[in-house]
Image (tube, rainbow, N blue to C red):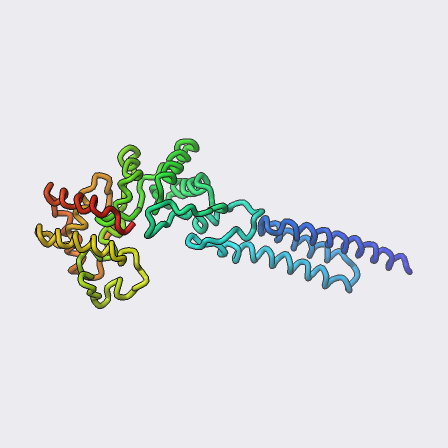
Length: 317
């Protein structure tokens, strides 16, 4: 064998060995991050270019494509494995939460239809401190002005406040949670935070998907109404909830304001309410909803509302 061929074989063997090491390392840590896979792929291509023997070139090309594929997968597809509403495990357990995932994998606090803590195992979620840090960066960048939370629990609110005080981050100023005549769970635990910490409630679903307007009374299903179109929404359709709703509709009819305005006026009257979120599908509904700001509930009406609540508390949490 000529000296040139020996040199080529030696060089090729070294390149082959290094490429094998890169492959082993990549297989063990490819789940850490896309930049590692990208670097390994580029390294494989570079080493392949140093090898003089043509027969081994395909190996290095394949190695390069393999790690580039890993990098592309991590950068694009892996971020979409888990979403806020999906209960899935972390597909890459060695990987720590990355900032781009902040808005995709957060704590599971959605407890629609349940009044008790669900004991959901959130072993892989972005820590509240990290979430608030990113939101603080957005405030500094001028992209948002203030920070708020939604569907949060008393424990979660306390954690956000503690993180803000400990790390010098923005304090949350609002909480968007459900609140209505048939769902007053906010009053237990969370209302004290609004009073003591200045966190205003942005009350959503104040008319219980339109049920408190009375339009579904007697089993009616108006054309184009939400429950008519989406029967799967059963939060307010259970028998005990319908019974309570009918009692509030009857109360409104006896005292004068429309059922919709009674429901909205009650939410507006709470000291912890900063804003009542409405959803009108017609101009007539919009006028009726806005008109609720001028409706003042008498002590008699409020007493009857509280009596109904005590008789059947939170039938549609």
